[in-house]
Image 1 (spheres, rainbow, N blue to C red):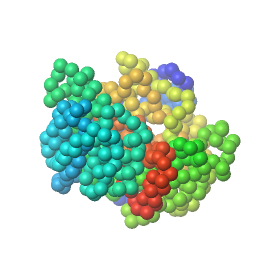
Image 2 (image 1 turned 135 degrees about the vertical axis):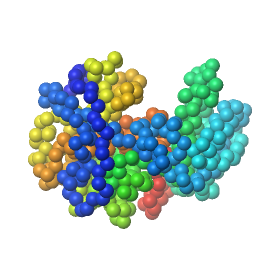
Image 3 (image 1 turned 180 degrees about the vertical axis):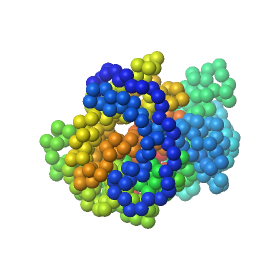
Image 4 (image 1 turned 90 degrees about the horizontal axis):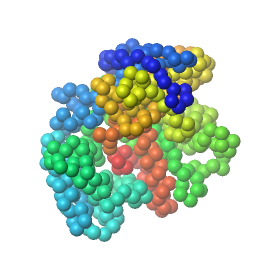
Length: 493
């Protein structure tokens, strides 16, 4: 499919999926996929040449048993409760700012956060700390008390200083929260010009986005999947890399989510370093960077140990580095008898575009999965299938989720070759597609505009960047913390 290809599929929406039965015994990949995909989870929309076009149903989110499910995080505005809202929770926010530059805007926002959070049964205990020096360092210096979320407004976004703060958050076990004053000022002065802030949707969304983040950083769970089957008994893992600043090697980050019975979701991060000395230069030149097998084994063994008492029966790994035989062999050894699915999510390369003639601007429907039939027909021998998934586009309610030209995700899905004969490649692609749609919405850092990538990939890349762009001493401290204890993802949010 080249850029600009028109795909004239049908526009009928797939039905909402029924909830599957609870619990799964020891399973193979075929059983795992069959248990997670029903006939109502997708429909065949048509064929274009050698491409099969599927529509997959959008997973719903739950914010508690006494509230209706929501389709997207931004629908959270109509709900006055977090998923764990029955448990009293507060964030002690020690906030640093310079009153001479941003006092008026900051006070407006902080007062709004405190008041609005109460509506969600969440208390923000605010401590103003005026400081006109380096606010990034003020936050780092204040990380001396556990249970306090340390925050500040910063004049402009600085990626290196942001990562520096998050590195110290990891080491000191203290969540941090930064607000970009430049963005706040733009929302108030431009997006809300002539409109009361209490009536301005851009400001209200920005404020609620901060409340959701603070709640998650304080240890709460804003929402979970409504249908438990997609995550039930499965650990979802993200793997990404970043080049060290001194070009001496690479950092590989890992983020993973463990879902207990598909309801309580806990997420953690880990990381390691590797260099290029023992890698195949020809593979790197032809296909791209891959991760050496011993590094993969070390990181995945940590996850297997963490999942040992969690009832995990399978693993799904999303990664941005290319798939290499060393990595596949490492996974076969590490996961032993547990089923696993490896998904390479492309971050670069030649962009594919998908258009729908049925919409005014050609924008596609979100949740369209396109498979090449050649891969489906050879899947039983190879265990590999390639797919394209629209993660932006129009929702089933007709809302538009993009600006500019939407770009779909390209994925290579691989399973153990010896199990491929027992797996339906179409249902496998549907499962991974629905899981991808869900994981984008499970990012509690992005309430209004969630990332296209599964959140585990986003935070795996962030932890890799933290290692790649900090100094040797701090990098050593971060690695020591990640090695010795399970570090919650909320410390790098």
